[in-house]
Image (cartoon, rainbow, N blue to C red; front, side):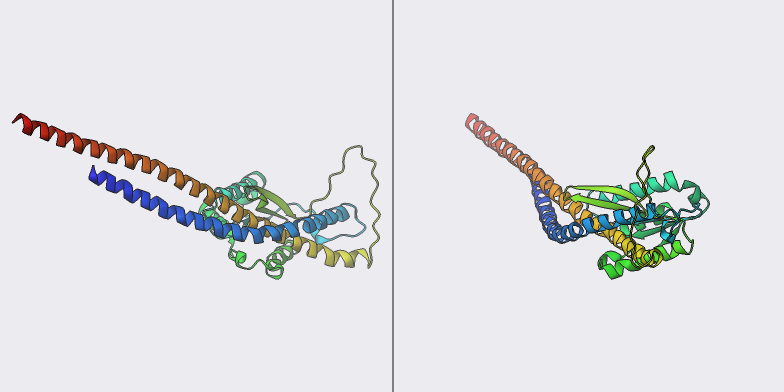
Length: 298
């Protein structure tokens, strides 16, 4: 019984030590989340408005002017960008983003994958480790796995610019991005967004809405040549900021839950310890009483 009590004491000590670690990680994630949430909260309305404007303009050009990034071609080769975090301990966050990316690959690009015409660009170690092991035959672009160490616009723009240059050169005919969309600390949504070509607005059947008449200054071609890449870079930056905030939100929630679970385990272990201790004391008392009774009888 003494050995059993010692084992329970050691386990209580171990769980308390783990609880201190999870509590500290929760506090660190909460601090990082505040900064990440502020960044995406400021960026999202701006990026969404720019993207809506871009889609609207390209949907209304109808041959008057064109931009390479809005041209829909027969998809002969595609790129899937997978944005995950570098570290784990974030609940099911990375797993959900990877599942979303995998689902897109299987549903949209299974034929291209079978022909070896699908590339995967991973941002974040978790996604890279998974796809390197799961899809060893695919061409993995791993130049930007560590980009989360510097999420400045200029640094992230290098990735989006490389993708846009590849699309412009017809190296890819379609580019999708799988990422985690941040809602709040407790809720993150895995999503896949079409990055290139820029999706056009779907016209409703029977709609009599006329073509929007935009005034371009300078001319359409010159404006679109500078405007479209800038908007696409902003949109790509949003994907990474969304995922960054989602990661810290998911980790904070996971560590908070882990801390609560550790507290419950400690309570249960203390009850078990006290019960075992009472049993040991009762047994010892019974042995003493039994021994005393035997002596009196002698």
